[in-house]
Length: 81
Image 1 (tube, rainbow, N blue to C red):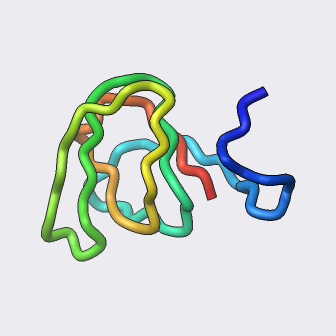
Image 2 (cartoon, rainbow, N blue to C red):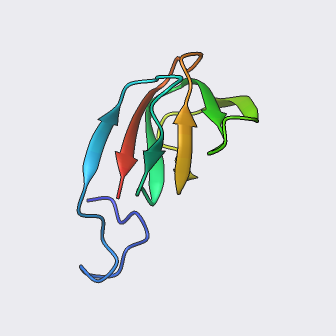
């Protein structure tokens, strides 16, 4: 079983949500994004002013507090909260 860096149930996530890339839906309340399938990940800032795109491998954990997962995203991503 994978550890994912959590010790016991104390800081373990309690929410897993499939993310559908969308340019207008602000996502918040997640501790991180988990990349299920490799591809491109395009993130937008909370205020919508900055967008960053980069290649991500399957299994990557991306710290994420709030922002946008833009429609340019080709990887499959799950929000962990």
